[in-house]
Each structure stands twice: as C-alpha cells, then as structure tokens.
Amino acid sequence: MSTQPLPLEGITVVAVEQAVAAPFATRQLADLGARVLKVERPDGGDFARGYDTAARGLASHFVWCNRGKESVALDLKDPRGLDIAHRLIADADVFVQNLAQGAAARLGLDAASLCAAHPRLVAVDISGYGAEGPYAHKRAYDMLVQCEAGLVSVTGTPEQPVKAGIPAADIAAAMYAFSGVLAALVRRGTTGRGGPVEISMLEALTEWLGHPLHHAMHGGTEPARTGVAHAVIAPYDAYATADGGQVLLSVQNDREWRRLAELVLARPELAHDAAFATNAARVAHRAGTDEAVAKVLAGLTAAEAVGRLESAGIACARLNTVDDVAAHPQLAARDRWREVESPVGKLRALLPPINLGGSQEARMGAVPALGEHTGTTLRALGMTDEQVAELRRDGVIA
Image 1 (cartoon, rainbow, N blue to C red):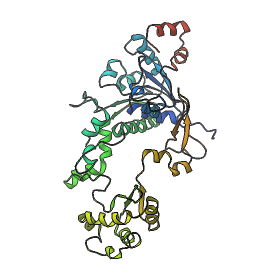
Image 2: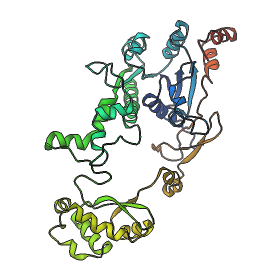
Image 3: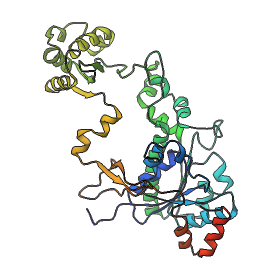
C-alpha cells in the first residue's frame, strides 16, 4: 500500500443529505480521503436507512452510498442543533445538501448564504429542478426526473417505456456534484475562494440524454425504443442461445458484417446481398437480419456463441444477471472486491473505478451506525460530557 496521502486527505466535508444524490457524491469524496461528517436526523436518520434490509439487515442503498463517513445525528429544527451544524460548517472545506427546495435557505444552509459567511467554503446545493423556474418547488424523486428528462421515453420496448434499472437521475446529479466540488477546490487553490456549486437532477440527466436529444433536436425524429437492440445499427441485439442464455453482439460496420456472415453464420452470400450489405439496408430489413443471426446462435451454447464471435472479431457480451456480475471473472482477475466494516460486520463492496496508480488505493471506510460519531464530534468542538448528555436527553442529538 502506498504511503502517499490520498488526494483529499485534510479536506473536511459536512453533508446534510438523504437518499442517493448527495450521499453518493460525498461517498466519492470519502473514498478519496476526505473526512465526511454526515448530519442526520436523530429520529431515524437518513430515510434511505429504511428502504430495505437486504444487506444483512441494513438497507442496500445506504450501504452503497455511505461508507467511510461519520454519522452526526442533529435535530436542525432545534436552535442548539442548528448552531452545532453551523459550527461544524465554519471549520469545513466543503458543504453539501440536498434538502427539499427552500428548506436549506430557511436554516441558513443554502450555498449563497454559507459562501457569503465563509468565502473559502465550497457549498453545494443539489435539487431536482434548480432554484428558479416553474418547477423549482416540484417534488423530485429519481423516477419522476427520469420521466421529466425523457429518459423513460427512449428506454424499453416499442410497446412499453420503462425506467432505468438504476437511479440514473440521482447518479447523474451525484457525479456532477462530485466533479463540481473537485473543480471548486482547484479554483480555491488558485484564488483562495471556494464558492457555490448548484446541481439540478433534471439538468444532469438531460445532459446524459446526449444522443437521443441531439437526434431529435437536429434530426427531427425521436429515436425509437428498441429494447436492447440499437435504434440505428443492425445487427445490434441480444439473441437466445441453446442453453437458455442470451448473447448480445454488435456489428459496427460493413466489414464486420462480412466477417459475421462468413465466419459465424456460414452464409457468405449475405455479405454482398443488397438487402444486407450495408447498415442502412440491414436496418431496413431488420427482421431478416435478426432472423439470420438468431437461427445460428440458437444452436450454440452461450459459451460457444461468444467463442465463435470473438474468433471472428465481432464485439459481443453475455446478457448477465446481477449475480453474474458479482461473480464476474474480469472483476475477480483485477482484484476489484474489498470488504468494508458495518454495524452488522464485514460487507463486500466494489473498489471505486478511479484508479490512482501504483499501489495507492481508495479508502473504503466503515458504514456508520446512526449517531455513531455524534459524541466525539461534539467533544472536539469543546463541549463537555455534561453538555453532550443534556443534548441527548432533550433529543437534540442521538
């Protein structure tokens, strides 16, 4: 293990956060060495703690988004709890919040107010739709934003639009918040000033809409929903195999089509047939294209199909389940799995995808129990045991 410090060691983050968008952003900061103080409600904490009990009694969302943090349970509606939060922020480098629109401002925890009081602070406001506009106060949960951003309209089959299987709007906002914090810290290093960072889930996910958005705006038509097939490339789909599996293959150009026809399908005549020789022709005759591919792969096991496709230089993949991914040979070969501590013992977790080079590895700290670090944090602020005990008796902390 490297003796070099992680990039964000020495950086303190205070987060008044819940659900996924802000917690996933600050988890990235914690993995890179920042100290993250997660401020939670004393009565139950981050409501993501209660989403499920799948992780040996803990909520899977919470385990995913909150390792490496210190939990400080404060009632921000009590002036004493709010005062503690402001004292913590005064000593912090970064503040992140994703409270309901307007709630942070009422507490003096909005980015504009905090940056005015603390010029070196980087303060992040994450919201569903942004601070202004007709949707500013509209409730914003991940699936709702997926719908508003048009993601659902381009995902699914021709008959049925579907949401993404992951919280795409939350993740998009989280990753822009993460990169926004890093950019603001670089700016502070050159100017001495932090400043506000504003992230809207709608704007983050609309940016990710990318190709469909530009296709519709500039091409005049919206891409069709095609399941796992590609709207404008053929063959590019999943095909059933003899052992019950599915293999997805992608032909990106006409040279690859000729190799597929000759080496995999054993039908060299298709390589130059006018109905299939170009991608435009294959898309126009998609049913025939898919039928030719499906007939051959249906007689092979998934392993045989992948082997034959790879030998021909055709891009392909198995249509894996989540359990398959957890046992993926590539992740195992690259030693990507670790164990993190939690209130229920060690839990398996994936190393974050930012590889820092050499033997330096991300810090994957423990998943905190609610209020686990409240006492030590308040004592570090100068409070006595008696003062801490009084706050706990009054329900201001947990």
